[in-house]
Image 1 (cartoon, rainbow, N blue to C red):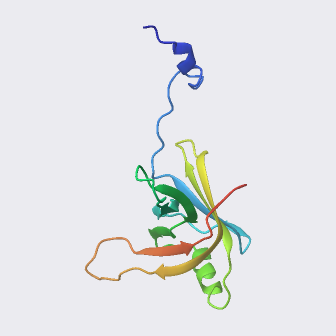
Image 2 (image 1 turned 135 degrees about the vertical axis):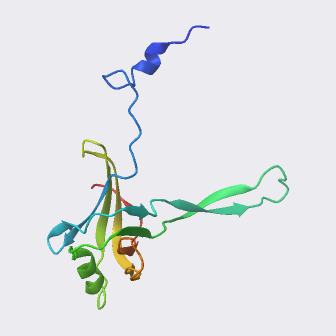
Image 3 (image 1 turned 90 degrees about the vertical axis):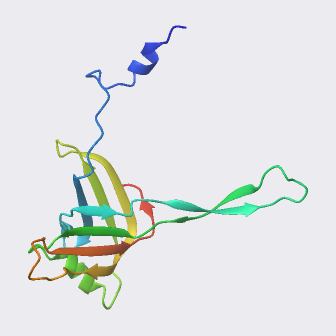
Length: 160
């Protein structure tokens, strides 16, 4: 049986190769509108890039072949950002600004390729810091001092 290779090669880049997967270690986190600055820092880790729908099951009387599954609300876990302590303080200013009034902003996470161009962007609406954890100070440790910021949000946003 002959395979129509034109059908597959038409989707390949001009170089004729499939693009390489992008490594996880290159990403940027932006929060527009915080003190006029966009970037709140460079982070070594970002988790919580996920989304899930609640599923409701409904059993129909007399139908024993299957159970109906209905989509419910979307659920989004908090974003968790980790980084080494630096002199940059935009992140902490945002945390302290939320002590008296919640300041919600968009948070944009960009995965960048080796050429520093964005490969994929995730934006989150109505985000605000809910937890900050400082470094574990230990005179006998040789590890870097790190801080963690946990951000609640209203879900994925479009248009960024």
